Length: 229
Image (tube, helix red, strand yellow):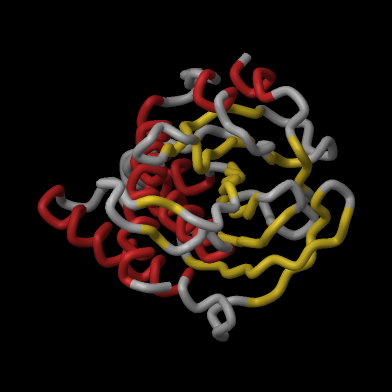
């Protein structure tokens, strides 16, 4: 991906990471608005019907003209950023977030004067990686060090997303609408991240902690309002 696409993707990633952090800090029971999801021209994905636990909304990311480009749906316990020292159970949270990214052959830059590279599986991997960091970063770290740590880890997440064929990633086959689909998958001390593509003109990313990615399945969400109820 070229520099222009990196700027675009990082801008989207920062928005998604911020959304994930806002969701994490808002605490269980807080519901985000479904309105942005309803404006999307592409289908949203979540865990399939085999998953019977809680489902919740996060936020959507939009282009400069307001077009919805991506968004996330959550499953399990809504992550919080409680310090592990203060709450020993904070590192045992169980959640999985599915990121849906519209496939865009052409994307305009924020100022409308240029064109960014098309969205790709790497875009989904980047958004998932930054979302995982926003949901699991060590809150007990000194405030002066937090931003430096987050900047460093976010840059690493970008580099990993830009090199999906390298050994840091393995291949994992999971069903998408019942069809076996190849994903790129990696694990870290913070959780796991995966990314791939689906029918309907979208790329899928996912991240989680405490819930194994093995055995998961994804499907189109027939009624997104269920997540906001």
